[in-house]
Amino acid sequence: MEVANHIILIVAVLVTFAIFASVLSSRIGAPVLLVFLGLGMLAGEDGLGGIQFSDFKVAYLIGSVALALILFDGGSRTRRDAFKQAGAPALILATAGVVFTALITGVATHYLLGLEWVEAMLLGTIVGSTDAAAVFSLLHLKGLRLKQRVAATLEVESGINDPMAIFLTLILVQVAASGESLQHAIAHPLPLLWDFAWQLVGGIIFGVIGGQIVLRAVNRLQLSAGLYPILACALALVVFATTQAAGASGFLAIYLVGYRLGNNAHRATAEIARFLDGMAWLSQIGLFLMMGLLVTPSRLLPILLPALAISAVLMLVARPVAVALCIWPFNFTRKEGAFISWVGLRGAVPIFLAMIPVMSGLHNAYVIFAVAYVVVLTSLIAQGWTVPRIARMAGLELPPRPSPRARVELGLPAGVGRSVVAYTVDPMSIMALRRPRRLPLPAGTEILSVMSDGQVRTLQPGDGFNGGDIVMLLTEPDALPSLDRLFGARKARPKAKGIGPVDFTLDAGANAGEVAEMYGFMVTPHERDLSLAGLMQARLGREIEVGQRIRAGSVELVAIGIDAERAPSKVGLDLDPPPPQSAMTLLRLRANEIRNSVREMFLS
Image 1 (cartoon, helix red, strand yellow):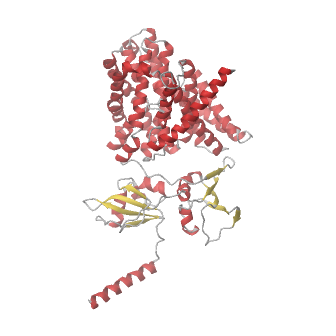
Image 2: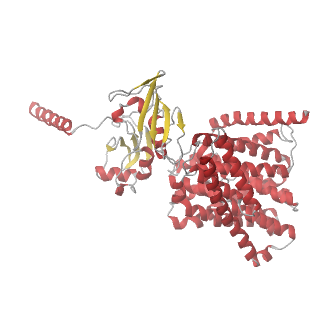
């Protein structure tokens, strides 16, 4: 009993420290997963904690469940549009991309470490796939907003590339354990191709069927609201384990279950989303803490230099070459391709896969495990720490949306297709600055009630909203990002002479259609493919002056930077411009200008 209490105390203290450390990491810009991993190493046998943990079987079991839950949450966050935008390039990166990366890294490993070809290729395979936990953490938890196609490619690739990495790892471990040569395995490819096909196709079949079962169970069973998230997770893990037992990819299956649940109306939407968010956080904390405890840093020193060289080859050669070969048919720009290459983050999956050779008793298993660990550390430090800066340099980062002060979603019966949401009005939001008739509410959105100081009041046409008011709306699920923008607090708007206030500064090369969708302004169909600079030039002419504006629905675009060719280099976005003046007012102002000009001409 005393040992059990000890374990509970240690686990609770580690998780608590990890949470506090994550707050500190966000202030210095460090990847939160690196903090969890470092804290685990600090608590391990070479660190201050002195905790000895070397049970790879237990770690593999816990790691399997944690990765499954992370992928389940990631699938539920992946929108249907992401597959439409980036399904093809992501699938090629998740299959052929992993193979190309593994081959190049394996060759480097053979010459840098002197391992046999089978073991070298095994290491290349283990570190060949991007990590879902790291990518989802970067794209969702840090609030980094990228151009939609680039973000969708990275997100979908990381969610579906595990089957290829796991399949190749298991095959190469089997070859190494049996003593066969790599050439013999390659000479008889049919069994390998069949195994891979079943991993992929079986994972899809179990995932699609399992997703439908989970969705129906959530919608049809009458349960307490708190039981729906538990039911969803339990059934998803049943699908995962059943798929694994059938020899297919359980990780792909549970990702598709989450995707199915997250893209269809169901009961307890808000409860399940919050529960999965918490479970994903707990899984990541537990997984990376355990990985940190599992390694002995002093045993990394003998292979540190060649491991760093292998990591450099992976980041600077193998991943860029693989990405270039896989995405060239899809018209990505050079900057987009370079950014996708750099965000090939390695995280828990390589360490998780590196446990398999150790449990199989291969000769150089711990060397492979140690190198994989160094690769993960360098990836999180070099890539994870610099991704936001690289995104800005490549012109791929989009300004953050204002976050709402508080949003509560109320569940409606499945099939209704609409949601009831309640927001608390922030004093610095557009809702507090505009009258209701000037609010650009999304289509299909209705204000149901307004509560001020605990009293429900009827909204009159001339009434406005005050900070702290609670507004309840009936809306479409797709309209929530636009409502978040309306209710979110904005920073103080900078003003410059001849320009006026702006909320965000955008790169003039950003796609007008993508920015229009995110900020709710209007462009015509033939303007959607233009850049912001091209949009302004199409409406104002080829030569533009600083401070010139164009109206786009309820917002205005402002030229705040001009290049040598008199085209915008920076474009400001004013989310709260003055209302457009009537034609009569404009005629009156023009008449006054003419009268003043004539008067000055005769008086001078």
